[in-house]
Amino acid sequence: MILTVTLNPAVDEEYVVPEFRPGGWFRASQVNRSPGGKGINVSIILKQMGVDSVAMGFLGGYNGGYIRDQLAKLGISTSFVHLRGETRTTTYVVDEIGRVETGIVEAGPYVPESALARFLKAYYRMLGRCSSVMIGGSLPPGVPQDIYRDLVHMASVRGKDVFVDASSGALLSAVDGGPKVVKVDHRFMSMVMDVPLLSLDNLKSVAAKLHDEGVPWVVTSYRGYGDLFSTPEGVYIGEVPKSRVVSLFGAGDALMAGLVLAFQEGMGTEDSIRFAMGCALEDSLHLEKGVQSREAVDEAARNVKVTRVG
Amino acid sequence: MKVADVMERDLTALWEDSTLLDAVEVMFSHGLSGVPVVDEDYRVIGFISEKDVVRAALPGYVDYLQDALVIPDFGQFQVRLRRAGKEMVSKYMAKDVISFQEDDSDLYVAMTMIRHNIKRAPVVRGGVLIGAVTRAALMGRMMEEVSS
Image 1 (cartoon, rainbow over the protein chains, first blue to last red):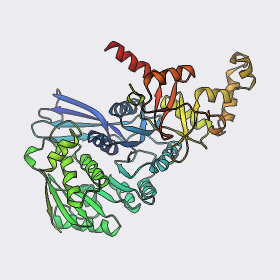
Image 2: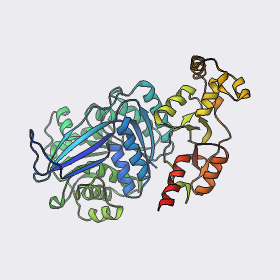
Image 3: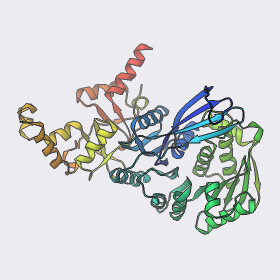
Image 4: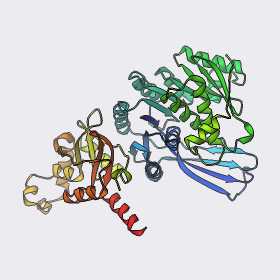
């Protein structure tokens, strides 16, 4: 079984408006509400491909109840610690014409020490039931900034493949725990590494630094419609056809879900990249979050171009 | 219909060394009437219900009299609950747990729950917790079938 961890889940509210601009009033042509947070999204996408996982983290209040109910309807196993506060809402405005997305995120509820202790105990025991772990997203208030290091370490010393998709200090601390795969947030890493990450050489050098820290796989976005995969077998760029993309909302989570499943199924390096990019492409072919099916992902993967660049 | 079609895939659980206060916190925050107690491998080793917690906080003679009206005031109950709250759930949990398999029929599960007067029970695979079934969920599903 695959374990996903979302310490700071969110209800994603997506408003589609014809031509969005600050200061105006708009009537949404479409509103989509769904459970969100990187780990939860990965659990949902895995389920859409027929793969079981268990989702863990913290939930609270009305939004927490909504996420719990939605995951239950989808038949996803859960083990969340419930809080007295309210799980956050993340609001996205999608400009239908300009195809531009604007997002507003909240901080999330405070996690008291007792809730954190309950989570850690449940997490440790749940590791015994799982083969791989995907950890992602921001940290809620009250949780130590270096918690990802501990979560990754607890899993990696027990022989689990750990996948991390995070930014800021959370990502840096996760690297210390020994993950198998990290997805690097572009903007933050350019800030921390003090190099503009626009050129391929700069991206490769950042990946090399993370390899030196012991991370075998590094994934980061490359230009608008591609991703760079720096792996033990070489450096690759996966690209999808730009013309078919409708919305990139959630495509990064689909990519991670694809990689987790590819590792679970023992795919080779290039096939893993193609499959992960196929997930991202299939997700981006429609406004609805997630993928249609495993078959649809396999079909989309045929349109992915994988090029070795190092 | 199988119980797998109606069960919650909720793996919320307590451990042998969890306290009664932990149990109360989990029941309250999750809105559950009872919680499975599991070992390190998530094997179900007990079940603690609201009734078990209340019983732990009431004087022993209430059981004999079968009436809580003999308690002079609610404050006394709170004091006893706070004291008992530090004790392990393993002391008060039901060890002879009524649990179900995924492919048990809804009718069998409903009848067993009614016979034993339980509201929530664990669903296991090889003894390992994989979810829980409630009387309310069973009734809800039966009503859906009747109306369809």
